[in-house]
Amino acid sequence: MKLEFSNLDVDILQISKEAKKAKSNDPKVINATLGVLLDENGQLLEFEAVKEALDDIDMVVAKNYLPQDGGTLYKNSLYQYLFRSKVDEVLDRYHLGSTWTSGGSGALYMAFKYDKAKTILLPNIRWNEYDQIVEVVHKQIGTYNLLKNGAFDLESLKTEIINNNESILVVINDPCQNPTGYEMSLAEHEALAKMINEQANTKKISLLFDVAYLNYSSEPYFEFLLPILETYNSNVDIYIAFSGSKSFGVYGFRMGALLYLNENEEKVTLFEQKVKMFAGAIYGAPNSMSVQLLNEVIHKASLEDEQEQARNLINNRANKFIGLCFEKKLNFYTYINGFFVTVKTKEPLKLTEALKQYKVYVVPTFEGIRIALSSINLFEVERLVNSLKKVIDE
Ligand SMILES: Cc1ncc(COP(=O)(O)O)c(C=O)c1O
Image (cartoon, rainbow, N blue to C red; front, side, top):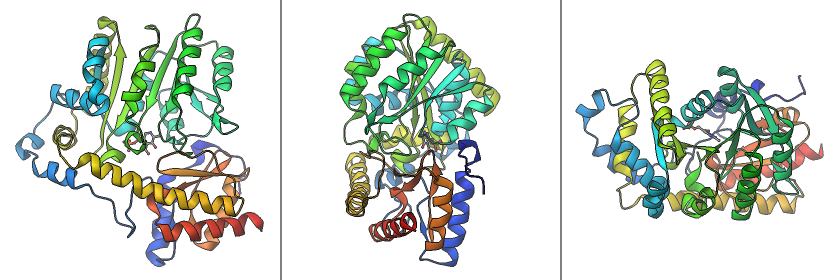
């Protein structure tokens, strides 16, 4: 068995397929590999607001071609959804460019391709798909240490920026980082902005916020973050990769968008022209169901409550998991919110394999194993931690 870890060797869909097959033969199998939110009965969590919005979809529009960027209404719905009460402030302050993308993955691809950076700077513990995307756009991966003493390791990011001679795109997967569940504090965001501004005096730096798990943060993220976003120098290009997959539980609809914020209108126009060309070349037109769905669902009265309930569902699992880990002295990376928690290990591949004897399936990640709290119930949390303890002590 290969013991050295590489993100490119991890095929999450393949691992999930194996786990699903095992579970179909034996219901006792715990499938903690899936980045989807399941209820306590193992069913995909459905939002009533989404069901209602789907009823409102115009099937003639759904069958037709929509504008490549999703159209004006989609953009406005997106800005409304992200910036909430601050949307007018954002529109006053910035020119905003955006385009529909095939989920958050498509947004990341567009950003990595469009931005001129030669190096994409990623956290060491990360969603493994980033590596694939960087590879297909023929750029280089740089790595910063995500956490030091349980908090964001700004010094490591700074060192990597200083040591890299090329233009850089820094990826910040926040809130609810995949796979740790870490969430940066406002003070950490402030320090990040200060450091990036300093470094941007001598180097071309772009910044991408991957907010795929936006609604699983306990704070209204961009309302909180906006005062800090506004402190970034105008020569720092800022992108936001949006995904509707987790926020609305519609993983297959491929709802996503890439936003670009800048004070310079020409730069924003150029962005929109260029990404339109990419869209035309890659998929032609958006999935019209996802466009209409976002336009409708943001107006549904029950949406916010249901999203809060979804957060609570995971929080209950997380609290139980964390309590048991403390009890059994199992080490995990700082978890604050989100679908995943990561238990520390120097041998992720070995631990992943060993857990299978206890019918437990997880995903190996850098110096850890990723456990999807989103897809296991409270009862399984306990069995999973017990199995983990046995395997680690063996
Ligand atoms: C960190 C992160 N970013 C982006 C995505 C992309 O999500 P999707 O393409 O399904 O919308 C995911 C999905 O798992 C993710 O975990």
